[in-house]
Length: 229
Length: 315
Image (tube, rainbow over the protein chains, first blue to last red):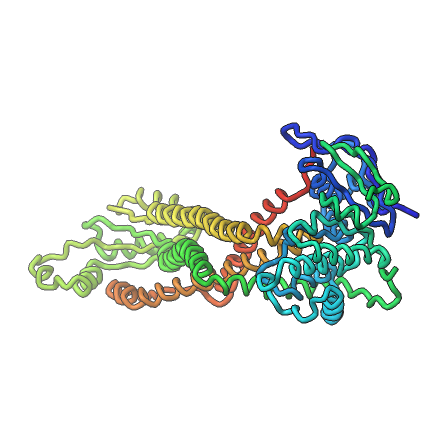
């Protein structure tokens, strides 16, 4: 199976000297779901920022499919970002726009026809159990609903890769489980999923591959079958 | 895998996408301006006032040029003859001057004609009558034909019959230089105040960007292009510029209306039919185009700076 994402000896040092990542190498296969875990400051956020081209590596190569992200410049940064869906712990919804408007943004950016946008927004919101909340503003939603809106926005354009930064951090176990089930269904729809989480019970329950970061180094790459109960 | 499924809708044309996104930005920018009427009006008012000043001065300068145009076009040289030159000698001199290649025409103004004009124009008839004899000399009004008026004036001054030669070249030159200086002052003011207007738009757009920084960040993470981010702000700057242009024209128009009557009365008292000229439709349209571009440029510069700051960091 070909890889959607590959890190080859990637290091990242921020101005000021902080070494966020050191020689990190791993690969994410097409249609794979995996987790990245580690303590605070382990380099998880930097990893996501490199994938999303908010940062560039100081050393090493990040490949997205066949694309070397070091060579992605100018207007192509935006095009790359359209292929990566992102879900944040704090949702990052636009507070003055309705649920439907928030979810439609990736399609508007791609220039999708208005009629198609309406259909796809309806469809993805129904899938998320939010069909009846299309016209609500984010402030009128519960935390779980807001997170599902964020996920709907991240997947509506069917990105090649979905990255989620602590997506269940503020949610109760039931909601966390629901959201993880949503993520688990994405690979069969063609979207690989990389979830950053330090919720160990969740990782054990999901039984997916887990990358462990510590002080910027990838110290373990645990296969699902090796996850201890 | 459902991605790229056969049921996927056909991709829209680039032109339609472009038009859609422009319409989206246009509507969005109008909404932004309307949602903050106080800030919008203040920006437009400051810009409008800043632009009205050089515009008004420019109109004043144009009117001054128009007013002094006839004076400047007059190249007439006044040759005052000595008091002992009698009318016959004056007529002979005039006839000989008409033969010169650098003279187009010569008009003889006798002392009697000059006195009659002075009496009519000054209202000092009784005082003049009290003088007894006419103190005015014969005047020859010489219209030059060549290019070198100064040489002709020197030649006339050298005539034995000449008492005084009045040649307004120097005065006209000075007037021309004052007008040129005034025009330059207007240009400098226009540049400075135009720059001020640019900064006003830039600052307003910058504040708007700051207040929407989070939203812009989200849009960028979702893959919004620089153009998509920039467009609503460019439209916003354009609205500010257009509004400021309309306001500046309105202010100039109102000032013109307020000054027209008293100025007409003033110039009429000098026997002039001068009327204050405002901007015609073409120049008004040019002003609107210019101020709109100014607004667009201010927004473009600020958004460009902001977008450069949000590039992926390199180390």
